[in-house]
Image 1: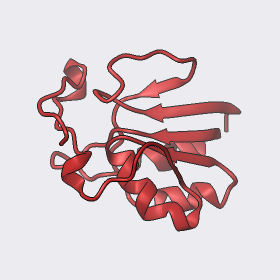
Image 2: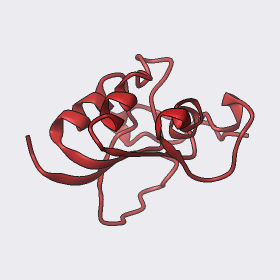
Image 3: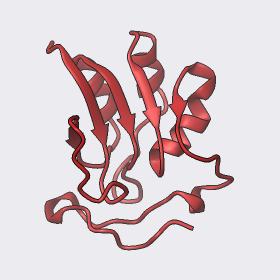
Length: 121
């Protein structure tokens, strides 16, 4: 297992921002569990895949939290998971939203850079 600092799963929500962390494509089911096993100290979830494959599973995050990994969620899929998993210690950033349509961002495939196809409300 590597001793890594921070990984952030993001796509169109950040628009290519570079801030000194490891960026990966929007998360799909199993990606967060893999990041936990890789040894990251903190994991940020912003964008996640849905419709085309399984979304990140809720159980992936509490398993990481139980190992002392800090989890942060914002903007899109990360905001949804942060609201759902706040009682377990996940930290949400940004304003509170009422529904999926406020944060869901449709985007193209990773092979072409996850271009934004629709904007969230």
